[in-house]
Length: 387
Image (cartoon, rainbow, N blue to C red; front, side):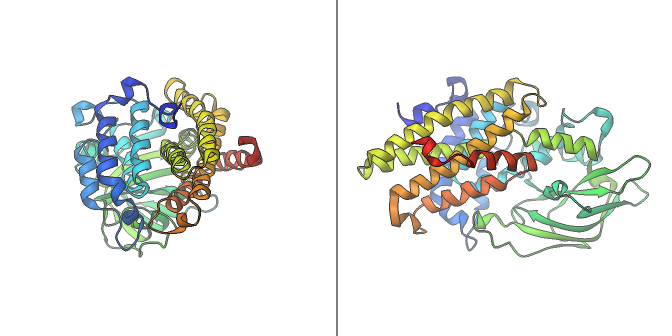
């Protein structure tokens, strides 16, 4: 059986209009531009972002009445796999939009209703985020960092806040229209809270974006750090306030699932490993591609089954273990492809080295201590296990 057959989606998923559109745009538009999108001198093409938005691929799970496909998680995962496998940099810019768009529609079901309060920005931006008429990014990764809050929010007495601090990561600056910035409201009578502000992605008094960071992969995503010095946030710009413990629990549950983007890259790498082995008369490479795919495909099926059929708080240990194992397989697969292609894989004109760098990126994206432990455990066995 071919690698592509092992990873083939069920017919109902493969035939969904969003999946069909993702396959077409990924192959015809994104993949040819992927080397340039990775290059900070060129970068992700705004025209491509607009094309994905226009095809509804940033609105896969948004309700049809808001301009989306109203699709389920499995369809969404397939779309992400296809986009990430076509161009990691473009996918990474688009995926920033997911959280602001979802939070504008509702409080996550894993957050108790009495622990969160949607702000005016949710209703204000609901339609344009759901339909991706405006593209949003995020600066929220710092909430996972231990120690003093990197960004604090001081209430201004009129329903708004003043934000101060530093955000290490904000992807898509100059490509996105809005940015969701998270800050910690110091503990008081109501306990520690997080506030999510949705602001225009442009300088304002006290808000300064740095130069694009020199990243080893996805350098064209225009990822910057943000400096905030008493930045005014009006009440109308508040998207959500939530109790910090409730959000941390939600984040722990959400990050436990295997990442479709990593699985998409794995799928692409093993497909290419099979082809490369056939082109270079390397039957051992073809055999390895089949063995790794035969191992990965059931893991992917199980991960998606848990994601779509179980409660978010069920099977957490298994979910995290599957995420770690699939990420490790992605590293194995991309490196095996380099070994098969040999020295020419190191040329920038060849995609193998870029895919290996993207595999490393998927190890650290949305990483938590639980995820890191699972990844290290997955790397524990010697590679001979797969031979």
